[in-house]
Length: 392
Image (cartoon, rainbow, N blue to C red; front, side, top):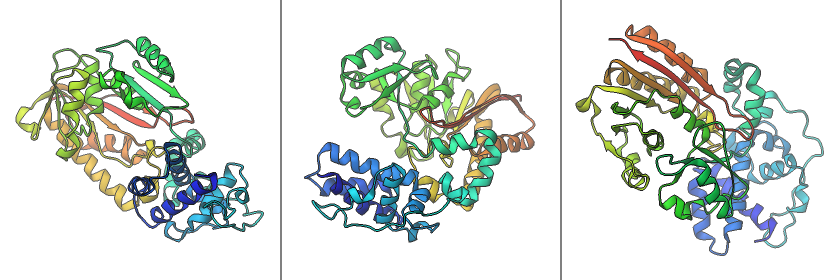
């Protein structure tokens, strides 16, 4: 594909995404229907689509759209605006030749951007995020407009981080130890093909953000303690706890389908995890991890369309669910045990506000510590951890 043809393909995918279709689904459909596209073509189209979604309002503004709702945006103009933001003249790719998009005519000066447009956030979120993040807000907003780094988690039960770094380098990857978490490795540059390595098949590493890994580093894990991962999902944190020698480990999720791959992943990692459909039958536990469903605002670099789908109503629904899960986690914890409340959010409404509400509701709780990880350019995603002790 020519560079212009890649831009045209991204426009076609974006046109459907802006009308409400999931980006991953549309990219997969385009890839399957475009057998002529090579791996580099597919990667380039994907990068264009996700770069637009990370910079959607500013790209629309730079493309002459002004400040318009998502459904009213024109994919051609938004794509041209992204090129402008990246310092590329749209006329060099909008040529109408070789399957490139037809020429587009943009105004020379779209004018100064409003604050919400510059931050690439919905207006209703701008104030609360500024209030919650304080002096860090500008840095976080900028980071959420960039691509996320690639991090790996070393399975320290099987290999040291230094040994794994050397194996990855021998395989042609630019790997380096990431100081943010004990087993974290950063991959610079080309990361495609990592899952094809023998080291991955042998369970020596998993893909996991360094911020997520650092949450597990901060858990008070002790050998022999029964630990429940209440919202385990794919089991990333469960396996990270196993790599630290924790256990016995139990995993549960409200959607059992999310746990489908965990037995295979655990076997590959040499970990033992018991899946529970009803954790109450195996309670109490000495520790309960509640990695609750949330807005995902700390990881919007990886799932950028989520910021445009979130509404005040949906956030309120999430807050109610977070309270319910935290109350359940408390009930499943033995007296003297600990509860770890986690989110991948930078919204105060999902973090400290939920902990304050829980402390008001339940006099059996003692706050132990809390920790914030904010997304900054080139660094981990955003996370929150609150450790609580159940007193009685």
